[in-house]
Image (tube, rainbow, N blue to C red):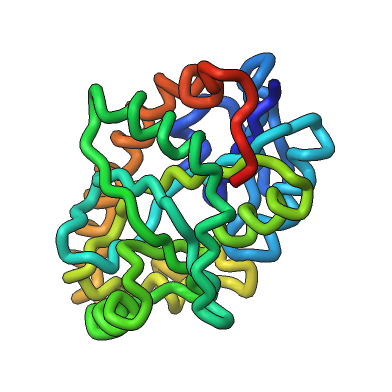
Length: 245
């Protein structure tokens, strides 16, 4: 059975394979694993998810980093989402996550890494401020957020395929993101390096925050690399195919 893995950023792709995968493209990393680089955001994630299905994927994984909403989560901590929350109407889509796949992941990963299960909130934009993270946590009960998982889960549901979200914390709930991040994004949610560098030159006080965020991102990538070593086992149910719900 082929597992499709949807990843937003090239840096996150690097935790799965040394191969370069351009945005909107895919590559098989083994006979049973196909990886697509979607780019940031829901629309890109939906397109990449459908591309994975066209390549024969029979189950989908959302893979990459997330922002913490819970104060208990620190950079490098794994979140295994047991339900997803739609940003449009705050609907709790617990049925989008394959329950037996989630249990299998918990059992497999608990032997070598700590993790937290909980709700994963969809965000349409990058959430910069601690106050906004606290508000979203209070309103939704979600422990973390990202921009792609809900979109991937919805494509999986439309095609009656199992879905699993594997997300690792890059920015903690008690950290304001550097203003340079949002300033440097294009309409697709990708960082434009020239804009980032110009902003740093004009606002050198942003540099320490960017360095700290880079360290947090490296901690997240280290955890993702550890999980990737178990990916073949993670993708296989001991009882056969995973259930959809």
